[in-house]
Image 1 (cartoon, rainbow, N blue to C red):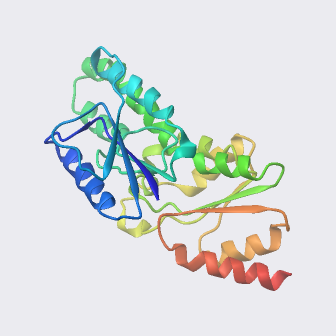
Image 2 (spheres, helix red, strand yellow; image 1 turned 45 degrees about the vertical axis):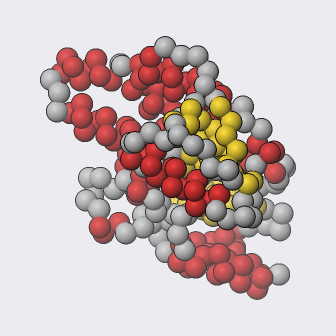
Length: 265
């Protein structure tokens, strides 16, 4: 597999750099992988099995540092790689390693402890605004755009199970609706492990459905995999495309849906 790994500085002593370096070593030790690292610099010796490509555009200050690096990464030829992996908040990568957490949640908790004036200035700080916008671009459903491009002219269904750390929480409650603009029909499942989260922190699927509907997209909330499968089996047509988004087993929905669609024929 041709794998591109993106990180600003390899060989640094920070926790994120150590994790990324260990991951590169593991990937490169598999002879079936061809690993290319894109970074501003690599401190120390570069492993023989790794190809290093330097991305070090000029910058001044932290905001321009991150912006110019993101622009350089987005120019990486996608056709040259099967997978692009990074711990940076860059839209369009295939695998995001969220070691740095969710910036908007961290920032809001930090700002809440500040006096009113400093809180307002903090929200207008350029690097905060850039990082927040980058995070929103990253968490937009690029998968749906790719599905739309791959299957032009066909009706696209999106079935989402909020299962990851950030999706289970209401961190992106007000921003998430726009992530479904490339789907024709949206079905939301119940929040995974909802009973383990305080209600004040938990994503509200019904509120999200209302937000999606305001953007002109049909959406519904169906708790339970069996209810979702029954609805899709009844409503989908032969040429429709169904994208199931979850980072877990989703209650065996894939096998159940295939069986239900097969029985429909």
